[in-house]
Length: 160
Image (cartoon, rainbow, N blue to C red; front, top):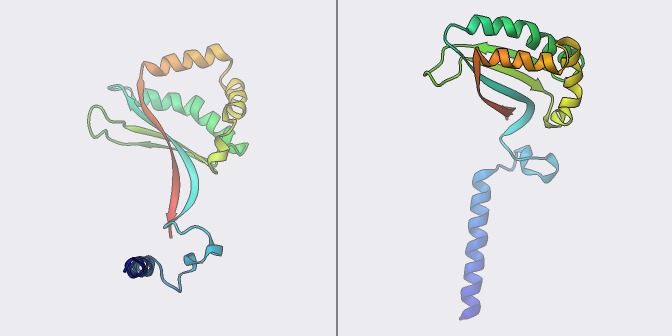
């Protein structure tokens, strides 16, 4: 009696496993074989560091002029040296008074590109902006015209 009950439970478990497997993959799908890699529905791409900025009232143009100097120069040099793949600045209307209106985006090849990043970018900042004091003064000036609402690191994906 006990053996029949155990055998019945085992058979039902195997049957349910087979049914679930049949619903999530097809025999012709290349992702079903162990040799073909991940079964995820996407392919990993580059990594973006996204800074969400809210400029203070009437200060958007002043902030963009500031970006045209230090941010553009350092980003172009980082791109030239292969530290970043690209960078973008997006501007738009804030959805509320607590929302951002500018996005600063830097594209990196992968997460490993973020390792030791300061050792690569600090010399560029010193060369193009100046020493610690100039960098600090620039940061203080920017605080008067904008607020950083957050920074996110996100991976770009391509759906399969």
